[in-house]
Structures are given as C-alpha cells and as structure tokens.
Image 1: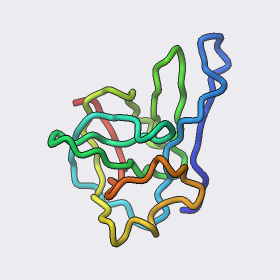
Image 2: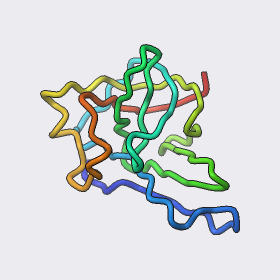
Image 3: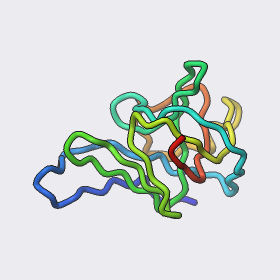
Image 4: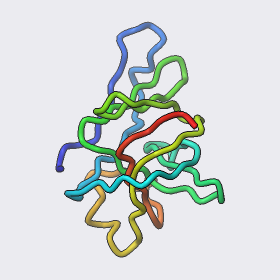
Length: 129
C-alpha cells in the first residue's frame, strides 16, 4: 500500500480549505484486526492518532483510501469501509501495535516530522465506543 495520505475538503462554507491534517497511510502489506480502543487525537499538528486509556499517544496508521475532512472545526476520519469518527471521540478500533523496530517501514515517506511517535497503531476499522 503506497498511496499517499488523504485530505478531503468539503466545499461547504463551514469547511477549512487550509486544513493540513492527514491520515498516515499504512505502508505494510497486512492489517491485523484485534480490537483495542482509546480516543482519536491529533499527533503534532498534522496527523491523527489514538490516545490509549493509559495516556500513551500513538500515531494511527490507516488503510489506503482513508479520508480526513475538517468542517466547522471538527476533524473527521472516514475509512474505506465507511466507518468514521471525529477527533475527540472515544472509539473501538481494529488493528495491531507497531513497535519502534518496525515503525520506519510502516510510515509513509512524506509523513510530517511532528507526527512521529515511539509506536503506532494500525487502524483497520473504527466505531464509536
């Protein structure tokens, strides 16, 4: 999966056409699907991540085709399967943790520098908690 990260902008007058929030697209070949959870959160000023219940912030790695839209100050993530949630929502996700040893190969080459965390989580599906 080598698609670039996605950022959709709604043509509605409430949309922020200058939004530069992205969903990091997972570069590995397999998304495992155990369920976990946390709160969708911003990583740095540019990426979407998951804040674990223990307070650990992890970069989210999403499947190709994931879109991010910012409308009226609300940042929403929609996965290719149609599941979606907003930053700040408590969610249940499907995906595996990606440790530091494997993180470099899973990250897109164009990932903004403020999006890097020690670990990441693959997010293959998402639903409100």
